[in-house]
Image (cartoon, rainbow, N blue to C red; front, side):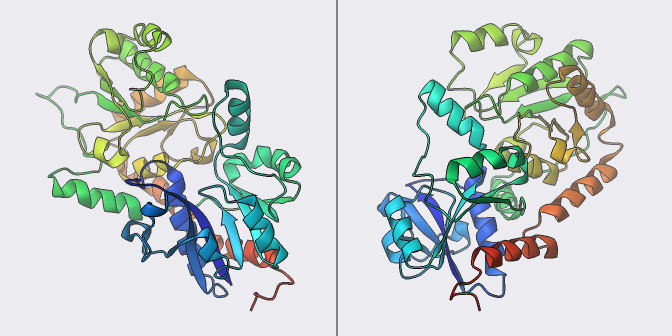
Length: 379
């Protein structure tokens, strides 16, 4: 079996732009381990000049081909990183090939916000594929996806590996910085300095916004100024000057007392290697996020509301800012004392999402064999 996964190509693209590029590599590497898979390649969609024919080292040397070149080189097409030409997909299916749409983004938000606010969103003819795959975080939208795409939908495992974090760690080390939580020392026998909190929500929609994390930081600071020393909010430059943003931030003590700063989009490892030593996050029906795993990998306190990750980090439910405040204060006072236990809980999560675990290999093998049953390319 030969598999091609769609991948968006453009000059100067960073693997840290979002989690999708990393997810594609993890899936490709997993599929390469399956005994009935001969080759896995990336199908480039975008600017031809950005294609690296021999494989981008950052992508693990995976072969990259154009859609035209893929016609004779793949048996299964996974539309994942970019929308493929529906006419080409029709051709492939007419030739007995299989097509999967792997939905990684939150499907309801993408559809609703593009129609209401006129935002551009990738789209294609809904009946172009044989199956739709979705991640556990989007299980509630399975019936919606089935109705939209007029085919069977299936849940597949969420996978992650630290290879890209390790790569970024090596890069910051070359500049003299270190990624990873360091226990804080007391100052003059007094309580240690408060946490320098970073917030990484993309602020592109209501699913992942900095509003709740900023309120949590400010709430903790108001109750106990020793718990939070500073707040660093990334992905804010594009909305910082808006009147609504300024009206909101002007109500925060941390902003009024010049203990907050706003930046553009930055690499998680680059930021955390500088000064921050904790992260506060919030999501709405999107509870699986590589950000969480990257932060846990560095042993940093992660204050989050992801039910999927309830046993790791410092969990608060839903939009409960008061419980988020309690968890941030708990992290400020107890994290150093419970660091070994914290690491152990995080390692359990890493084991569960390891692309090469027997469980995840088995689930994807089962999915591929079911998709390709009664075809000529199953050995």
